[in-house]
Length: 231
Image (cartoon, rainbow, N blue to C red; front, top):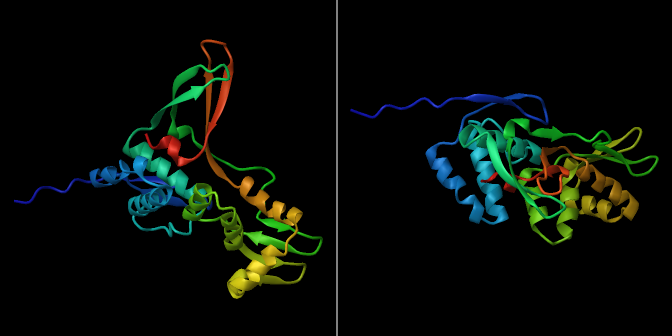
C-alpha cells in the first residue's frame, strides 16, 4: 500500500509591483536542503537558488526572471516566514560599540516607496526616458561586482523607451548598438538623473528599534538585502 500524500498549506500575498494576489506554499524538506547551501554559495548561485525556489513555491505562475528585484525579495521573505519562522534574530551594534541582541518579525517588513520616485526621467526640456525595473539576477550581479561597466549595462537594459512631446522610441525596436550609443552620449548630469531612478526604487526594508543598555541610546536600524534573513 502506498504512503499517503500530505496536503501542503497555501497562502496568498500581494505582489508589490502590481498589487495582484499571488498564491504560494512553504518550502518542502527537499527545498530546505537547497536553502541550507545558500550561506556558502556565491552571489550568482544565490540568485539562481532564490529564483528557483520562488518559481516553484508560487506554482510556476510568475515570470520570475523578469519580475522586479523587490518583488522577488518580498516573495522570498514571505516564503521564509511561512517555512522557517516569522521571526529573525539579529545583532544591532550601537554607536558606543555595544552589541544588542534583538528579534524582529518578517510580518513587519515594508516595501518602501520614495515620494520622489518616477520611471519617467526628463534628460532635457524636450527628451526623456522611460525606465523599467531590473530583474533580480541583474541587480545581484551589479552589487556583487566591482566592475563599474555593469552599472552602465544595467541602465542600458532597463531603458524601455525614449520620448519627446509627440514621439516614443521603444528600445525593443532599436539595435543594441544604438541604445549603447545613446547612453554613452549622455552628460554626467543626465546619467546621474537616470541613476537616481535606481537609488529611489522600491525596496524591501525592515526597521528595527532598540535601546542600548550601556549608553541608553535609542537606535533605529534598517535592514535591506536577503543576506540578513538567511539565518
